[in-house]
Image (cartoon, rainbow, N blue to C red; front, side, top):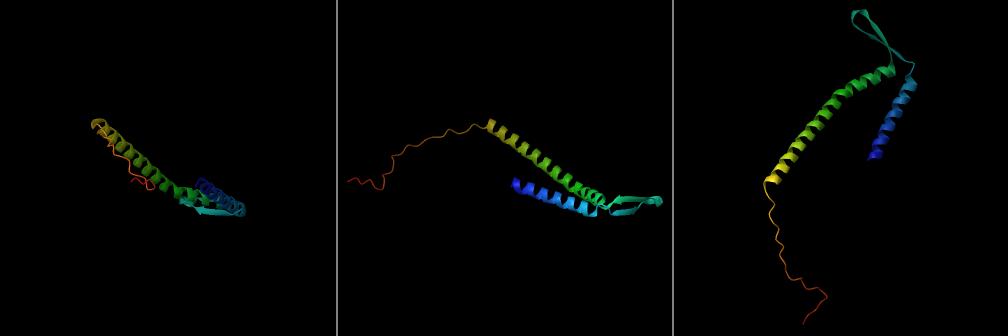
Length: 107
């Protein structure tokens, strides 16, 4: 599974590098408030916009992960408390005669 993850990131990095190399000299004018105009490189602008779009989902994912870990830790503490309060019942071992083997014929 780790190999697939590394392969995915390498392919994604290769695609981004190819895009930057192919479109490196493209410039984009962005009109801002008050008559200001910002001149950006197209690859830089697209990478920044992609990362800004990815940021909310990463924050939501990390929040969900943190909350799940907290809930799991709380449940583990409650389980440990319950195990400490209630003693485990003693297991009784019943001894029974061994069953006869199939090839063992007794007359």
